[in-house]
Amino acid sequence: MTPDADIALEGLPPGPRAPVAMQTLAMLTRERPFLERARRRYGRVFSVHVAGFGHAVVVADPELIKQTFRADPRTLHAGTESPLRATLGPNSLLGIDEEQHMRQRKLLLPPFKGQRMKQYEPIIEEITNAELDTWPVGAEFETAGSFHAITLRAILRAIFGAEGARLETLEPLVRHWTALGTRLTVARWLQRDLGPRSPWGRFLRLRAEIDEMLDALIAEAKADPNLEQRPDILALMVQARFDDGEPMSNPEIRDQLVTMFAAGHETTAHTLSWAIERLRRHPEVLERLVAEVDEGGHALRDATIREVQRVRPVIAFAGRTSHRPFELGSYRLPIGTRILLAACLTHFDPQLFPHPDRFDPDRFLDKLPDTYSWIPFGGGVRRCLGATFAHMELDVVLRVILQRFTLVPTDAPGEGWNYLGVAWSAADGGRACLRVRERVGFEEAPAEADEPPLFAAAG
Ligand code: HEM
Figure (tube, rainbow, N blue to C red):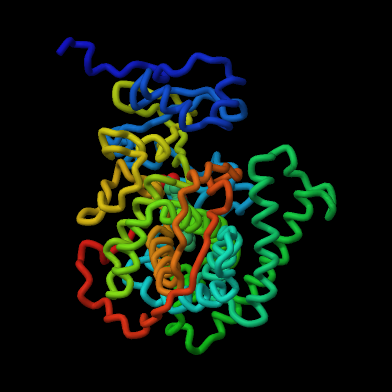
């Protein structure tokens, strides 16, 4: 080893030298092929230059991903520069860093612990059954709309604790607010309140209406004599205390609730559409899943969910920004460097996942995915707060579908990828074609008490 081998190179790793406009276009229209080519040429860490984003370092190496996820939160930020801060509010977990982030996250983690998730299964099952009652039989249709409806209701009921008239009023409000917010998050130049008819003006007024409803829900929870028995996350947030004994303020609770909604609704819905899209093209997996559900099992379903998330990650990157110089492998990255931890590349690395384009749930059947090469939920102290909730929800929805319907396989080419501002969805909305199952004996399915412990904890 030469004396210089330990000295980190100052600056960014090399990367494609095409003009910014071309790199930007490639990222928007051919993201994966563009990044794959860069990886072949420069290795598992390289720089790209994208308009409106500047220089960014793309990381697709599990060791370097580990180093980044484990970095000191004072060195790498994920929140304060995020465009989501403006749309989700100043307390949003996605828009804060360092002590403020850890303080909020510490309070929000316990409600999302794995053991608690079982309580939400009946709610998700009820919501799914009601939506599936509307599904057409024998004709192709897009599942995306239905999955959005399911995941939206799931969050409003299980997380916000909204029921009855409150649920009916909140639902269209948050639907409208998220649709507008998704577009406005990236269009920063539109973030000016020019009155109630301007996009940002409308967005702010919708948020004020939502906040009013949330304040009412918080007040009701505080006055509820049965608060301690309530399973919803809002009820737990109301009871939680910071280390100094202080409760969360209403603005904090509101910002965290809308953050959970924004982060957890479309991501889960898109993953479900991708699951339908993949399964219809893999009848052998489908057949085994149906046999398993009839026997009351779920190991293959767990593995299938993880494989769908590997092969169709809806969030391409987890992002960090350096606030101090950061040593990443053999580079010393300057302050202000954007770092993109690339699920969209790492998940397709043939050395990590042999035949990466093959949809093969068996790769996760007897083992959990590796923390630093399977990263659909990001990682470290910023790992998705709702990962266990999402896995539970994906599991329940798929189980109910498999129990009620036969998904008709197709030999149509796979659906393309469609970028919708934050997440990647199936371009045709995850088209399904169904037959009603003849035998629906799932009420008698054996209890899941003797599940293998390996699969007990999701996410
Ligand atoms: C399949 C569904 C989901 C996917 C793919 C997903 C993905 C992600 C990713 C990639 C991150 C960033 C992690 C990082 O920077 O390291 C994240 C953060 C987050 N997610 Fe999810 N998510 C999903 C569902 C949910 C759900 C259901 C909820 C809430 C109920 C949720 C709440 C959050 C929150 C609050 C954060 C911020 C965590 C922090 O900064 O400390 N997500 N998610």
